[in-house]
Length: 151
Image 1: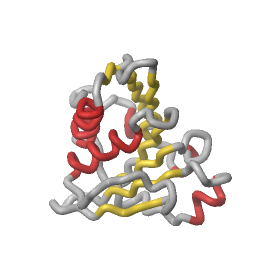
Image 2: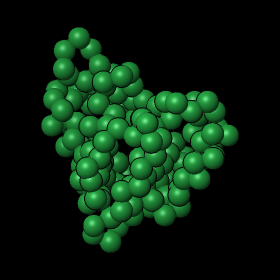
Image 3: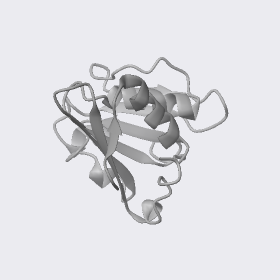
Image 4: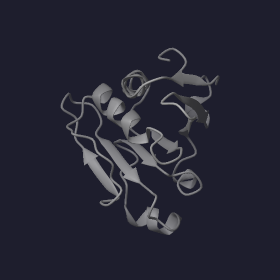
């Protein structure tokens, strides 16, 4: 997928809201990018789009939070793998990958084995506030790129 320029925090939340339209229970979203890139901001938009209970804040110290749906949809599981040492520690979290939309910050290199199908979202930040987002679908679930119509 082509790079998506994201000039502001509100634009990052809006991208998350639009991306939520393509997500369903069982989906895994892996967020990568440097500190302060906007991973949690994007997740806030996902939560708004999925209509889950908030507020959505960084789960760095609690490792994972579950945000139940307020509209009968899937809950959002928001995890932060920054402090985790490997797949065994990820498995210990016992994340509900079947019934929820699961978003993992700092998950690159740790959570890919949790699901053959996932969205890999990479956020790059330059010198200004503007960021560039790249979204890649991995696996049969994303073969036909159902995210293209919402982005």
